[in-house]
Length: 191
Image (tube, rainbow, N blue to C red; front, side, top):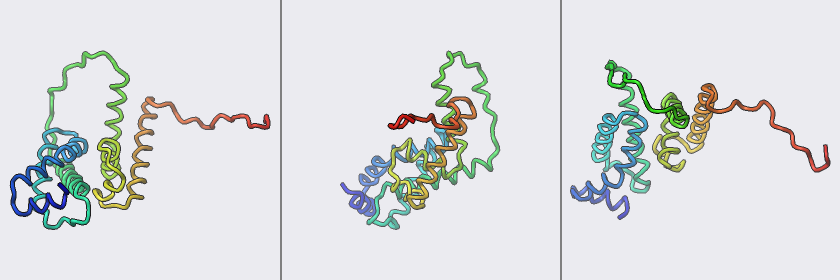
């Protein structure tokens, strides 16, 4: 069933259509919320808020445009709001993770932690496009619509995000520093 037909059925109040819409988009919405919020509980709460917003706003959805970017845009905006509220809320101490880690050292686990930390440290806009592109596999056009920016801006933000992540990994010694000069290759004339 097409997105437009599904929305039309939802607008008539058909419960099966509402369940279908949630089923169709819930994994994408929850994945975006998990990654942007980095907290399972918050992600689940925000994902529920997203679908509440979706159902309240279905009459305003432009049936000529794809539904997925519209819903992901709502998810990104709800995550922004949650992050803003989180920044203003007092932080509770969590002492559950104070036990020593007895697992053997694994460089790949360290690299994964550093990459996640680097992504989390990005500006909100950069992190959003990075997560939507690299972790959700969304095309530029869908991301552009979801974040409300032109495709060129999305590409620029994605490029800058990658550079910032690479710089952080280099500063931590996890990626070799850039060579000052590329090695010269001999030309066909024997120079």
